Length: 329
Length: 254
Image (cartoon, rainbow over all chains, first blue to last red; front, side):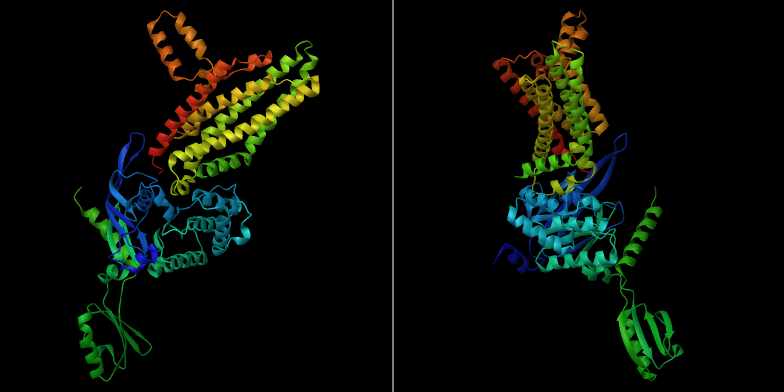
C-alpha cells in the first residue's frame, strides 16, 4: 500500500493534517509612514487529507494572505505552518503541492507547450514524461489544440485553465487554488468543479478560496470562514448550517388554515390546493400532523428548512458589522 | 536543471522582446556607419574604426545590461509570475542565479553579433583582420556582468526607475574611481578625502575593464593584470548577487 493509500485509508479525523496552521499572524507595513496593518490575527486551521476544503471570506479578510503564507510567498510575523507534518520552509515539500494563484499572469511570450515544459523542468520532471504529462493535462483542461499558441493570445478563462494544468504537473498531493472560479462563465466554473472533484477521487487534498458560495455547497467537504484575519467558523456544511436551521416546512392538503393551530407558525402559503406551513420549531411538527390528520387532511411533505451558505454568510457578516457599530469606540 | 530552465526562459524572454532588437539594429547601424569615416581619415582609419566600433558596442551593451537588468526581478514580482515559481521546489537564491545567467547569455549573444559586425566592417573596408577588439569585448562582458549584478541588486527591492538611476550612478562613478582617488589625493580638506576614500572603496572600479584604448592601438593587457581583473570582476559580481539573493530571499511577495 502506498503512502497515499495509507493516508486515504485512515479516517479523516485521525490522519495527520495536510495543512496545519497555528496562531498565524501577519503584520504588514503600509503607506509612507509604515503604518502597521495586521492582516492575520492568530489564525488556526487544519486541513485533513483527501478533503475538499473551501476557504471563504469577504474581500480583505485575509484569504490570499493565508494562502501566500502557506506557500511561503510571504513570511509570518508569528505562528507556525506545517505541510504534511513538516514546517513549510522545507523546499522539497513544495514538490508535493500544486498552486494556482488568483488572477494568474504567466509568461505570455511562451506557447502553452513551452509554458508546461518550463514548469516541468522546475519540478525536475524528465523530458519524455514532461511532454506526455503536458499533453495529457492540456487535453484535460481543453487546450490541447492551442498548445502552440502564445499565452498572450489566450482569453482569461484559457489562462486560468492553463494555470490549473501547471498546478497539476507534479501530480500533487495537495492542490491550493486561490479563487479558481473567478472570472469564469458557468461552463468554465463547472469544469473547474469537476477537476476538483476528480482530484479528491484520486486521493488528493484540495484547498481553495472562493467568493462563489453555491460552488462551495456543491463540492466542499468542509469550509472555513475567515473574517478580519481570524477563522470565525470551520466545519462541515452540516455542522455550520445545522445551527442555522430555520424551522420546518410542512406541506398539507385537504384542510384550511383556520383548522390548524396558529402557535409557532412563521409563515403559510396557499398554492393551489396545497398549504405550505413553516413552523419555527421542529417540536411543533407532531402536533400539527395530528391536527391535519384529525381534520381529514393529508401530509404531503415535511422538510427542515436549512439556510443556504450564502444567506448564512451574509447574515453572520451583517451581525458582525452591527456588533462592531454598537461596540464602544 | 532548474537554474538552467530559469536561465533559458530569461534568455527566451529577451530574444522575444522587440526593444532588444531595436537596440541591436541601432548598434549595428552605428558600427556600419564607421565606414563613412574612411573618407575623413587616412593613416588611422583602422584605429578610428576600432575606437568608434568598440564605443558603440560598449554603449549599447551597457544600455542592454542596465535596462534589461533592472526588470529581471522587478517584472517577475510586479506581474506576479514569481508566485508560481517560488511555490515550486525552487530555492529563491537559485532563481536569482538563473535570471542572472539568462541575462548574461543574452548579453553574450548580442556582444558576439556586434563584434562580428565590427570585424566584418573592418575586413570589408581595409582587408585586414584585427583581433585586438576581441580582448576589449571580453573585458566589456566582465563589466556588464558586474553592472547586471548591481541592477539585479537594486531591482530586488526597488522600482525600475530608481534601479536604473542607482545603477547608472554606479556606472558613471565606477568609471571615475581613478579620478576620485586622484582628487582625494590632491585635496586638503579632510571631509573630501574621507568621503572620496569611502566612495572609492564601495564603488567597483569599472574602468579596469575598459580596454578600448589598448585595443585601438593594437595592444594587449599583460597576463597578470588580466587574471587579476577577471578575478576582480567575478568577485564584484558574486558580492552584488549574494546581497541581491539575500534581499530577495527575505522579502514578502505581497
